[in-house]
Image 1 (spheres, rainbow, N blue to C red):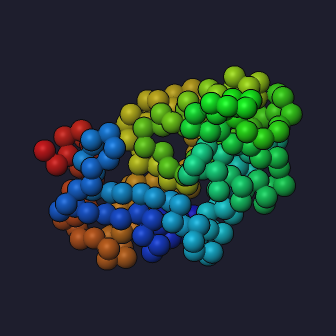
Image 2 (image 1 turned 90 degrees about the vertical axis):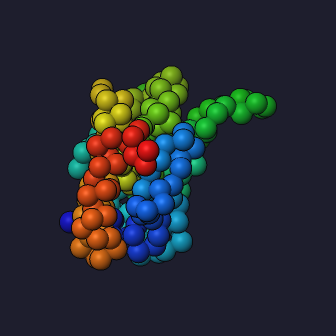
Length: 206
C-alpha cells in the first residue's frame, strides 16, 4: 500500500519526526507533536523515486486529462519537476510572491493558455499557501484539475478549505502514526496523544 510505504519512508529518512513529550512550535504558534520537512526525502534516492512514481500513478488515476504540471515553491517544486519528467509533461511553478523586478511574474514557465494542470505540493497543513497558488494559476488562464501532495495532516481546517478543490495525497497523518506504532517508533500511549492533537490542535500542549 503506497500510503504506508511513503509513511515509512518519511519516518526512515526523518523527514517526519514525532515528539510527544516536547511538542514543536510551528510558525503560526501552534503546538504540534509532529514536524515535517519532505525536502529531506530528495536526498534519499529510493524514497525520492517512491514518492515521484507514487505521484505519477496518483495523477494518472485521478487526473487523467492532465496536460501540464505546476509546482508550488519551494517544497513542491522539486517533486513537480520529477513528476513532470516521468509524465513527459510541461512544467511551471508558482512563486511565494511575485518578483519585484523584471516581468514581475508570479507563475514561472511556459504552458499553453487554457491547459489542464495539476498542482503539486509536498505538505498540506491548512492548505492556505497551495490554495493561493491555485488562484494565481487560475488567474493566468489555466484550468486547475486539482492538487496532488505527498503528505497531509488531514486537519479539519484543511478539509474545510479544500471544499471545491480536488485534493489527493500519497499519505496522511493517521496512516503515519499507525505506521510509527507498527515500526516501534512510538508507544501505544504516544499514539493516543498523537490522535488527540489532530482532533483539537489549537488546544494541544496547553
